[in-house]
Image (cartoon, rainbow, N blue to C red; front, side):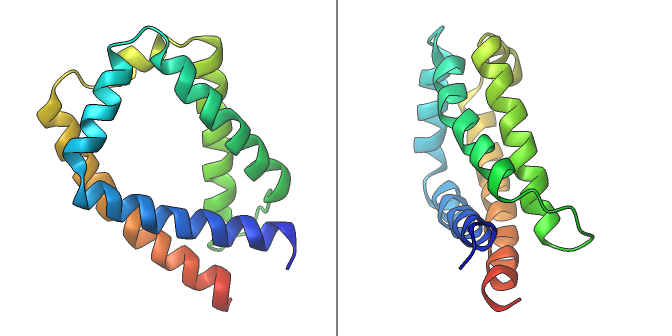
Length: 129
């Protein structure tokens, strides 16, 4: 298995797992991110976690085709950009996140549906295709 296939399968599987977790536990996710939002270093922590993930995805899965794999490539670039912004300007996390627990919970439920469906589609493509 080459690196791009591994990244595609791992990313797709992670989307399914995190998506289901967002659906089953939106209040816990909201509490986690509200806790990070309340801390001045919250954005920095998110950047420290997302920047290396984005770098790995871009370095190992930089595939620009008009098919499902491009979604993983775009996600990698967006993750890299987000991580870079949060490391260089951590306060942007405060401006980018909602202040209400209820808004966070609704958002995590919606994102959970999208992540789960997209993850299943990408996983099938990465395993079968």
